[in-house]
Image (tube, rainbow, N blue to C red):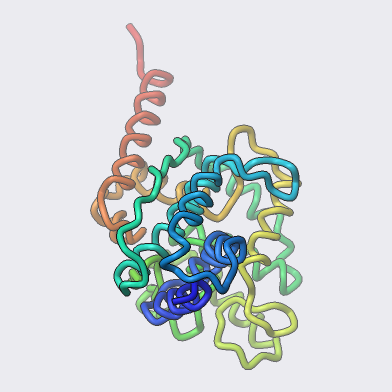
Amino acid sequence: MKIETAYELFIGNRAMNGITQGTLDQYTYTVKPMVKSLGSNIDMADAIADIQTYVTGLRTKVCKNGKTLSQGSVASHLKNIKAFMKFCREENFVEKFRMPPISWPKTEIKPLSQTQIRQILQSFDQKNFRGLRNYTLFRLLYDCGLRKNEARSLELEHIDMEGRFLFVHGKGGKNAWVPISSVMIAVLEKYLQARKMIQTDSEALFVTGAGEPITLSAISSMFTRLKKTFKFPGVRLSAHTLRHSFALAYIENGGDPFSLQSILRHSSQEMTAKYVHMAKGNLKAAHDRFAPTL
């Protein structure tokens, strides 16, 4: 079995199993370069030593910009190559293969405050379609704790306006109905009225002025523009930061960890527990600041 053929079968298998386009794109960025580097015609059985050398060298690999891969990028490459090699083992393309340990960088979650989110929302020009669309998209990411790709994948039929729910195609095939606030429903109604003026055959919820479905790069560009305007100290302005911000606000406002786990579609309580811990820390800081002293 040629390594290129094995890679194509791997991608086809992942697509058939409902893996999101965002994850498939990650395989293109991380696994495919390895296939090209080793030579597409090399046989999988003969490639083991070369694959081992490739993954071992990722930590010192120099990119086009002259820099080495970050710890997070190395971990992402290793995780995806590991998934590819696991598939190859299951299909008997190769024998047992040992991957080096994956070390993810420890990152501190620094969410946006309510004040910062209001400042950003006020910056969107809702008088034009793109401004209104981006305003709606930003609010929806925050209101429902959506991932970027989940928002991009939304279609018109996924919205239950009366019941106030969104049907979300989640990461790893975890599909779920996610509740929407009444305020968000009003925002969506306004956007959908404007969307009717756009000539399009697309069923995508978020479209461009030309009627094409919005892309992940377009969403990233929106956040890039916001970063240039808002330079909040210590906060990484991104869709994922909005998801963290939603989760923390949910707990601080009295939500319980188990319903939050369901809304965020986490497979375990481990990540949700981090938000509970952060909320307790914020509560303690507020107590220290405002509690009466004798």
